[in-house]
Length: 275
Length: 278
Ligand SMILES: Nc1ncnc2c1ncn2[C@@H]1O[C@H](COP(=O)(O)OP(=O)(O)O)[C@@H](O)[C@H]1O
Ligand SMILES: [Mg+2]
Image (cartoon, rainbow over all chains, first blue to last red; front, side, top):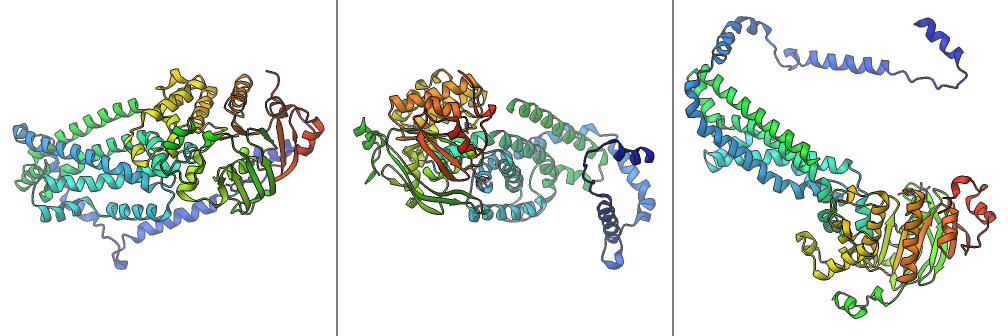
């Protein structure tokens, strides 16, 4: 190995430039990451406390609950249909409304489709703020504002979906080749015309793909939103947890799992057809 | 024809309809310096007569694209003025500039079609400057616009593909659709930036022939950027040679000698400077 390395320069008369040394940088970055991670777990400097002993003390407790969940109580099933359907409706309505909102917002947030830096940054800034707020915070505030039910849940999902769909689609538009825009400009079109006739159909696959992705996420999220009174199957999860019915919880978790997988399969099929 | 063209545009005002005939192009002491400091055109003055068929020849980087883009205002010169027919391109902005661009057709080396949408919608891009934005937004085009687009597609032999996806076409077909898009503008001037550089030789010849027809039959002023000397000789009547942003040759195309080309290129003529026989 070392012999071969040493012999290599002798075998060639090419002026190969010296390969830049990258390992010192990698070592420094790696060491910094390790140091930072360790520092975050030192309570003395305000780090999080990781009490490994408590896991040792309580593990039998957790094991009992997991054991119960692994023996699902199927008698709960009839009571789950209605809230499960509600969850699916919320997911679908949320994804559909956010799709309609995301189309113009994505075009305004991308550089090729909105050369005006001021409005583009304004849209991006507002969406960054929207994304920064956790979904359960939206749900809690909205339940207080509009009352318990599916409405606060749907609004929460719309805010969440618009945030991610616009970010991902506008980034896709930013990185896509947009030479067709120049033709529209040369023909005397304004940006709105160019976007409507050419940029929109070019971006359609990205939009559809991200909307399907948001639909998948919505089922997961709306299962949780019920915990704060925003409708869906989360309400039932909360109730069962309150009664320590871990066997019933197991059934519900299983159901959600099946629905999520079914939606994922369906959206993967749709995505393939879109290409 | 000219009455209907004028009647279609209530905003016309002092606007002269391109249907009134081809337009001359004038560049007066035009200098283009890009923000990165590159001077792509140096004090270029040119006068191209109405209805001329002109080739702009030069090596890659000599400023051909920059020159064509200053003519339709996609690039604004740092000095000098550009006039196309009645439009003082260098003093126009906003809606007036877009209206002027609408009278100037342009085709590109890479066709610049929206591949995921239909040939029809791509050709409709040529009607932008004649269409109110709300109509474009709602996707409602007038019967007249549809008629213009269909005739433009028919004139380049692409009518049967009108509902097909632009991305599914061959390179030559794409360039024909791009020509139809420009013709749908009903322009007075046609600019072409290396229109055949991405095409195989037979297709390149037929696209050049289409451009020559546009000049001969429709009487449009045609300015075409080329880097191949034989295409310039065969299809155009006047040749302008650019080298490092300066005009180094201006004369008839057919009689331009190899020595003239060597002067333009700044090096001996090579095999790759010719496309080859038809
Ligand atoms: N947008 C731009 N910004 C900076 N420099 C540019 C730009 N476009 C072209 N150039 C430079 O200007 C010179 C002329 O380019 P161009 O007009 O494209 O020549 P050609 O079309 O003959 O190849 C080149 O040096 C090129 O690198
Ligand atoms: Mg060029």
